[in-house]
Image 1 (spheres, rainbow, N blue to C red):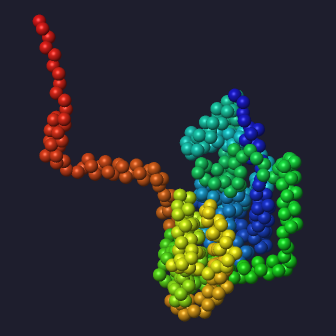
Image 2: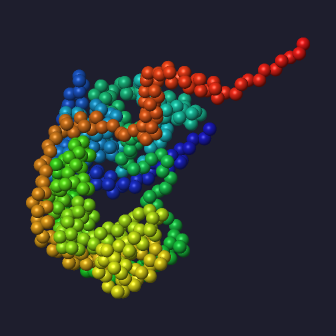
Length: 493
């Protein structure tokens, strides 16, 4: 049987995240600096002293101080360094994360860093599994046992060589001192967890066994590629240009405006529900909540599009327009949105209804649009489609933006809403509470499993329910009456 090492190595050599790995390598080199890095010292593990070890809390504290970030972000960054294979745990080998406690870690030898780009051979992995099989006396993890059986089948012709190498390495390891033996075992195990991740885990290296395409390779150019480049270049030349200073100024203004409303750049008040499992944030920001938050009302002042994109803001703007006797403008805009995003079966009916309600002569909620826009709309309604009312909708949108929106921001309606808006206080959860929530978190069940459980529950309820004898006897009697009489044949002697 042939070994498909070529295909598997082909998938392992690619490093699409090389830029990220180079930056992580610089951080690891800073962490190992004797003067300014993390302090390395012998640490006690049960009865064994591990040399040059660091604790998880030291890693988190150094990263938080070096990059001026909070402890949670520093912990995530440290976990990424562990997942990439630059730091390996001494105790918990299955979880490649940094624990902010006294858990022990060590820096991986630079020879095993992923930036070295040497291929991860199946033969080396087979020797490692055979060595663990000898040490554990056949008791391996489930996924390791499956890989062991698969490699044994593929490399059957040279399995004796693999077992011989595994026994030799196992014998050499027993001659080492216990601290060195523990360190080497943890180092080797962490390396293979990174490069041969267990099923169900996402590899931080962003490459896998089945990857057949090199993302860094240059594809061969065809005439179609050059034609597309020419068309794109011509369109780019015809496009109007803006000075870089103007565009950068607009970008800086946009970032300064939305900085406080970005959950990545500012705090998510009262707390981030994805981390704390507290749903107060979602309850306060429901689409049609009665009292909105101050941050939500503040977004309405950024632009007219922000106001209309929020259902609660649209309701508030509708109340203002009703007091000014111009609510038909917003109703027409909403009708056009419903036509644009509705089903195709009701498209023609909705277009006719909008025309009769807002555009026809003598319509009950007539809107004011210019003659040219009306002509385009009426002509398009002969063959209605989703965007047949776009011209009229854009006209009404600009009318509300230039006229009604400015008066709304100065109106008592908006001021009253801003006055009643709530500003939630921050929920503070300890690291132990967040870790407990993460442990209790479980993935949701599949709809198929839920349906099967409902059917089983109905069957159990039907089986445990009391049986009405009278109904059973009546059904049996009805079946006896409906059944046709049997024909009997008489045989003559």
